[in-house]
Amino acid sequence: MQIGYKLAAEAFGPAELIRQAELAERAGFDFVEISDHYHPWLDNQGHSPFAWTVLGAIAARTERIGLATGVTCPTVRYHPAIIAQAAATLALVSDGRFTLGVGSGERLNEHVVGPGFPESVRGRHDLLREALEIIRLLWQGGYQSYEGKYLQLSDARVFDLPDEPPVIAVAAGGERAARLAAELGDGLFATEPRADLVERYQRGGGKGPRYAEVPVAWAPDEHTAAQAALETSRWALTGWKVMSELPNPVNFAAASKTVRESDIREQFTCGSDPAAYAEAVREYTDAGFDHVVLQNAGPDPDGFIEFFSGELSARLRAPHAD
Image (cartoon, rainbow, N blue to C red; front, side, top):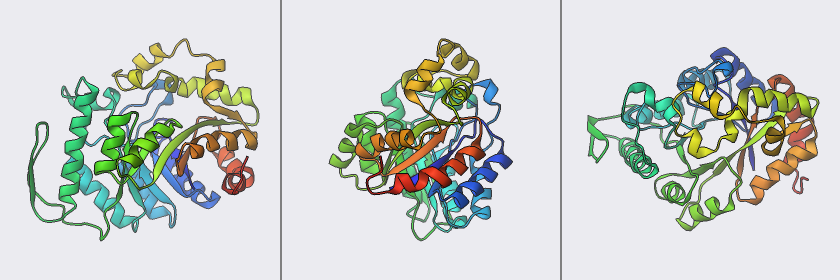
């Protein structure tokens, strides 16, 4: 199992994210994963820097730790040709440490460039399929063209390619996306401990890494942790159907205004008990995930990283962690 640290680009500015990545490397995390947004989920989160610039700086300031997007939508805000070039460059400057996590996107980030974000889930998946085909095509080298239902590519070439292309981990919340991950991806990405997604991915021939985010909130006491998560991360309880559709932070604030601390405690592991964190991670590993990302919504990132290195890491990595 590999253990990752989530860089919350909605909650911190670029310099702070780079600093946290350096701390995460020193603390023994295997990789960092960064969200790739244009807007934060809530206005009071206050940030949303360009993830690719941050990742490039992290690559230059670190030596060993893996890097990943969690996740990029390569269809509307970005054309897949741009992501093919960006990912190839990042793989080169990080000496092969980069994983490209991709998904079908949220209206929150994709609507900013104007109309065109598909209304249906099926349409978004079809668009993502074409994007992945374009990325794969460009990574073969040479000049390439593509004519799809949604996307086109005209005589394009990525000149700087790594010897080995980056791993592509495809986000899945259902069977259709899990099949796509097996067919055109190298790995799976999920946000719930769902064994059915892993099984569907593997039945489709998927043999690569299985990434999943584990929601936690660290503070010395559970109440402080839960209150911090309530203030900045209550949007996570709205459910994917809502999360993929609302266009702006103000809409997420309205949709999550009835969330209470008790609701947060049901979804987030809160406080500083290593056994509770180990139990939360085990739920994901039992479901078949082998790359778990600790997504901390607590008020003190430094305290959480210190907690991981001092009390949690060895426990999670023990053969029979409880």
